[in-house]
Amino acid sequence: MKDKLTDLQYHVTQEGGTEHPFSGEYDDFYEEGIYVDIVSGEPLFSSKDKYDAGCGWPSFTKPITQIVEKEDGTRYCINSAALKFIPKSEMESKGYGEFLDKV
Image (spheres, rainbow, N blue to C red):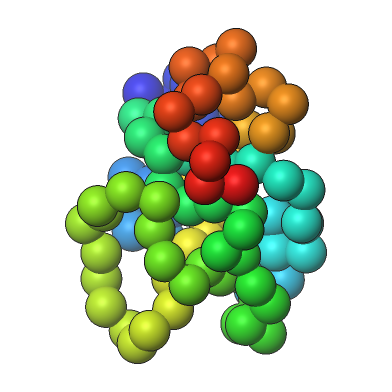
């Protein structure tokens, strides 16, 4: 797995690390699409539910599917390094067509 992830992605997803706030590629990013787990490809969040919580990490009001979570309130903040963004225009071709109605 280490050969498929950057050092930061590996640190965040496998070692419980974190990226510096306001440094991740998806913190200030608002294109239409979905965010999937960088390791498994599992759909996690829709761009429709993304908002600026001011915490420095991508924040969402709810997950797109049932997820395992560590609760810290009513928002979902996650490191960009743990996510991969699938643009709406590519969702069908990448196998995420069933989630088009979520964006």
